[in-house]
Length: 243
Image 1 (cartoon, one colour):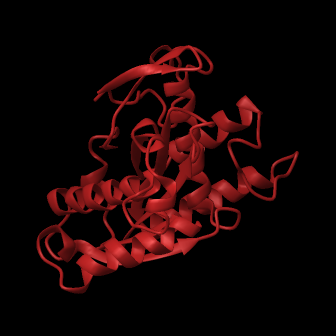
Image 2 (tube, one colour):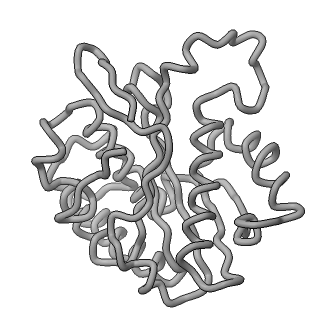
């Protein structure tokens, strides 16, 4: 647990991952083809005290069902071409989308990585180096811990494919970290499938991750009050874990 202040607001953040606020979903994912869709929030320290990955793990079929329901929400008046938490200030729309997600067997994933340790780095010396940015370490944490979760909760031999929102930093992380360890897999890396970029304006599952990441950002930034006392967290009736 890390404590501090951002713009005068006290915050508590974790520098690793939280997987599993819906305890029995691991037993309910019936289809062996798994995917993890991951989107980001607070890319810059100007946006919040920590970089955040938010996303979901589920079967291909469950994501297809959830995506169809998500599209119905987008088509509802006033229609939206896509959903982005920062662009939409409609709290009722966000709540409606949250309820949509909660109808499906999707396992939430949250990674928070503090910006502060990276602010004092020599940007010129670190330019282009893997491991020099907050994104890199959030990516490492997300992939490693999701693989560990699959290894612990899913049948032997089952693999998971990763889809991250397409950013410039993604290609470096995939090439320097994911491809390196998955080329000759050992341990949890036997669970690694593919790792590809996606467009969060076109892929509903990434928009779901954006909603989750945005709500976690509101929690740690103190927006909309104490998140422990408000039921807007994406899985109804649940709360973020304290690390």
